[in-house]
Every structure is written in structure tokens, then in C-alpha cells.
Length: 611
Ligand code: BGC
Image (cartoon, rainbow, N blue to C red; front, side, top):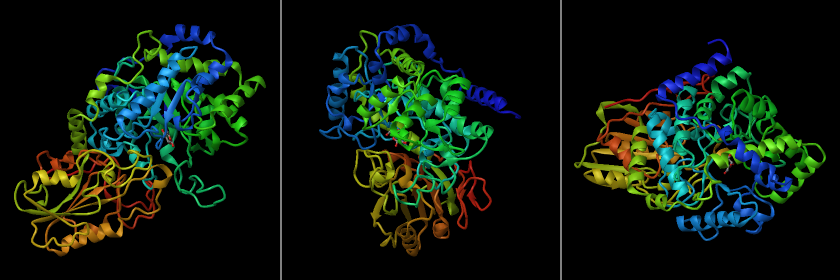
């Protein structure tokens, strides 16, 4: 392959071939006529309102939806309804906003966005699927598509209609706190799974009552940032979160081969929105880059949907807020996640237009793109159901959805090491001693972006912990968090790894196991029994400290709410199928950047044992 164009073509063809018949690509331009007609009836204020997306928690009054002609609202990671985080409160909140928009003039329904990144993952009781890193190990595009469908349905169940997902990042340095949001370090895995997730979320038909608008993110190169260029830890601090929101360096060919590969099939699958990245490419912030947003994405890749900025990403551009707004909108941003300063944003964007700093034609293009998507979603039809979907609500958190999450957990698990046939565990007989901080912790096994932005340890939502799942299959089970008291058991199982985190809070400089995790394994081994280490984490970790003591090691990633999927593999009711979607590092590595000198491999990309 010589040129970027060859790569583009090959990637597209390979993905289509892998997926069978291509999904009907939605042509948003098919809705040009009605969208233009509506556009021509709108005032500048009404147009700018369509481009503005406040976080609902900052909305000063319900009437501001009409006063400012808002076209969209979101719930960021910690933005729950005031009355509580339960499906009824969410439904009342989202429906309340939508009803207000429908009573306004002009009557243009709201897009309500939420981070449904592994299920409708903000909401208590929703089914939590494994994070993308685990799904990457399944290599199962059909399953990922099905998860997209169920996620969409559980999102429509509460009245939201837009998921900020899928993340098609291709993380190159696993110290990055968003590694788990990526399906793989390799674009050949990311591209088909990203397209599958897009098709699933949008149900192949945006007018389906169960579908949501997908948002492919974060464009472009979010996973390629250079260590130490990440975001500052505070206004006056020279210390940095080393990778998040940093700078991705390299020429256009590298950008296309690694980081843009996931966008091409997702656009072909009809993705209606894309989120530009906080990060930079060769020193230029993506959110203000005309070359990336207009030149590459809209012109070269032919993207016909619209661009939504990341959460206050404009605030990271140089200059005053007014200048930041002008730069980003002129670069090609169509809608802005403000998220709090909506009145100021509207005033300053208007001032930019009046001063000729943002051309009217750019405003018209942005709003045309947004309206086309609203038409394509069927939202403008007089009989459209724009409120929470009752049928979807009946299935919210259902056993049928949980069964798919269990399958996904099971297929994502990778058996890294299995000496002396330690696995599978004996079913229904003998004694198993279970240990480790994550053995009985639904919050730990769901990871970040669960109920709250960062996620949290503890009984945060419904589901089956790994311990509860093991108990249903094992003979006798004894437990101790630190692994003590295992004497006389037939086998010890330590469920260890990382506690939840998200974004920059998850940037790490080393990837060692926590001392209490190493101790749990060692204590089990001291009892003279075979030991299985189950690693529950958002990325590969350095396991050298337990290598001598763990007879079997299993990567379970952050498997989600259905711990039964982990038990299925440990007991061998289903043989392990997972294959590493990331290289697994060995101790003594001086870097964790894929392919760099100083990165020592313990288990190669694609590794995964069977029984
Ligand atoms: C993240 C996005 C997310 C957005 C809205 C940002 O901080 O980077 O991935 O979609 O917040 O919650």
C-alpha cells in the first residue's frame, strides 16, 4: 500500500467484505429540501440556538429552551436529574425538556445527548456491557452491533435520543486513562467494530423508535498523544496528566492509517454525528482545526452529518472566548457543548456574525447539517414519538438484555496463562477460596463511565458480582479480601486489578499491580493451593510480581454488570474465546507505547488460550 488513498480504499473494502452486505448508508443530503426550507424560515437567533448545547444541570430555567431556541441538551457524566438517578426521574426530566421544546415556536424537537458508552451507563439499573477494550477481544462485530441496539433501546427508554458513542480511538500508549474506551491498539480491529456499534446504535434506520443518533469520537488522534504533553493539572501547575488531551504527532498518512481508520466505515454505516477531540495534532487543537474538521472530515471523507464539540473544548483554544468560538465554528464545528455558558456563547457567536468574523454561510451550513439529521431521525414528522419509548422502557434492564451482556463478558475474557490445567475450575464440588478487592464489587467490575463520570467502587447499580456468580456454580466457597485462610481449599481465585477511573484521572505513569493485589495472590499461594488471578481492569497491567504465584491468569477487563459471564469461562461451561486486542507488557518495560524500543511484551497482540 503506497498512498493514503490506497489505504482509504482498502480499509473501506476490507470492512465491507468483513461485514457482508453494507448497511444502507443514510444520505443526510436526501433531507436537504425540507431542511433548507425550514432553515430559510429561521432567524439568526433561532439558528444559533440550534448550534448550542447546554448541560441540563446549568439550564437556568425551563423557559430558556424557548427563549434561546435551544436545539439540544446533554447530561454530562455527573449530570443526573435533580429528583434522583433512577429511570423514572430520567424519563420525567428528558420528557419535560422535550415537551417544552415542542410547545415552543418554531417547533423543533431537541436532541438529548448522554454518554451511553457501555449501555445506558449513567442510569441505575441499566445493563452495563463490557467496555470497548473487552469487546475488542471478542472480535465479534455481530455481538457489538447487538450491544449497540440494546444500548440504544435502553437510552430511548428514558427519553434521550443521542449517544456519545462509539469511541473509535486507537490507543497507542496504555498509560492513557481512556485506553479502555478503545476496542484495540490496532485499527484493523477498531474499524469493523466501530462500524458495527454505529449500525447497532442507529438500528440501521434512524427512524426506529429504538434507535439513537450515534456520535463517533474523538476526531482525530485522541489515542496517539505523546507522553508528557497531556493537559496541565491545574491553572498554575506545571505538572501534567501525561497523556490525556495531549498532542499527537505525525504526518497525514500515519493519522489516516492509525487514527482515522475507524471513522471511514462508521461514516459509511451512516453515523450522524462526530465529536472532535480535545487533543491536538502536531500542536494544533483538533477542535479548532479547519484542516481536520472541514478539509479532511467533511470534504475528503464526505461526512454529511454534523460535528458536536467536546465538553467546553472550545475553552482550550487560544484567545478570548469570542475568538475561541470564531476559530472553532470557522474550522467546521456545527454544534457546541458549551456546557454552562450558553447565554454568553449565543451572544458572542452572534457578535462574531455581526462583525463578519463568522460568515453567515457557515452558520447556515452548520444548521442545515443539524436539521438534516433531525429530519433523517424522523423527528420532524407530525406524528413522531419524541418522548421516552414505553416499549423500550419495558425492556430496560431486562433479563434478555442481561443475557447479551453476559455473553459479551464471557467472549471478552482472555486466558493469558493456564499451567497444570488449573482452569477450568471444578463445577459443583470441592472448595474454592475467593479473594481480592474486586471479587464482590459491581462498581469495580463496571469501571469508569458508570453511574458517575469516574465510576465508583461498591454496590452502585444492579447486577451480579463475580463472587455471586462463582457461588452459583462452585461447590463450597470461602472468602477473605486479603487471601488469608485459604488453607485446605482446592483452588484460590484472586479478583484484583484497577478501581474505576475516567479520562485524565486515569492517566498513570506505571502499570504495576497495587500492593494489596499482590498480597492477595501471595497469601493464597502460601496456602499451598493452585491460584487463579482474575484481572479486572481498564487496560493491561504489569503482572510480573504475581507471575510465579499465579498458575492461571485471566484478563476480564471491566466486564460490566453480569459477572456470570466471568464464571462461564472460569468453570468452562463455555470455552474461552477472547484474544488480546492490546499487547500485554512485561515488567522492566521502560515505556508502554506500542512498538517503542523499551516496551517489553509478555503476551502478544492476539494471544488467548483455550482449554
Ligand atoms: C468526554 C466525552 C464525553 C463528554 C460528555 C467529555 O469530557 O471527553 O467523551 O462525551 O465529556 O460527557
